[in-house]
Image 1 (tube, helix red, strand yellow):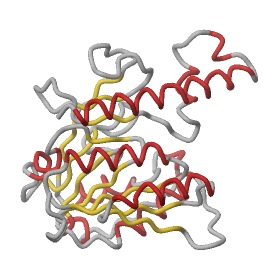
Image 2: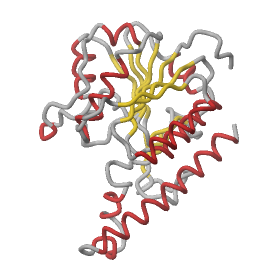
Image 3: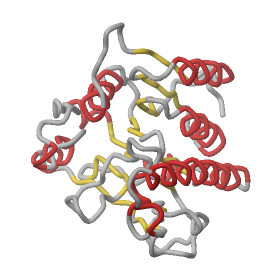
Length: 273
């Protein structure tokens, strides 16, 4: 890949103590992306040790740029995430850009070329399909590629409005794209709670994304959330994970182990291509 060329894609990632996820994502992008690209990362007030590790880890990449929130930034959760995405996307000048959750990785060689080929006069976005609890007619932004020109026309604010009404981070994307007559394509997923034939079958609650009629995995979302993934172990697991006080400890420890395993499997998939 020749990074002397002007980048065709900008990858936008918000960082909040997600360092190992993001470093593995950068590895995946380096080995699996066909077109020239750049990565913009906004740190939302991570612990000093994690910010230092990320800053040190990106030194090997001349196309990855890290910026921090100003001193006194005290937003957290969805508000912080949406604010960071607004800041990142405002800097996009490439023909296409991607919004990528820290714990979601593209795992297919030439993923970018495959997605860009599906963009046309009607389809202006393609990405990960939403869970059943959310609308199914437009991709969710765990990992989503968008055509920049169409996006810039819509004046989208990524900040949440009312989470209780399902107006969480990025909710305006679906509303404004569909209202403008644009469409999005979903990449279907299978969750490892039920699907036991994919590479992450031994890790609980992982989404595996596959293109229609294909067996090769395209992307994966660990589903970390705000709790090291611990919240998902309160459902469909041994009773010990649901015990008061001590149950939370076991959930967190399992989350840490499974994050390490997920990252290891991701690296294996990356280097096999």
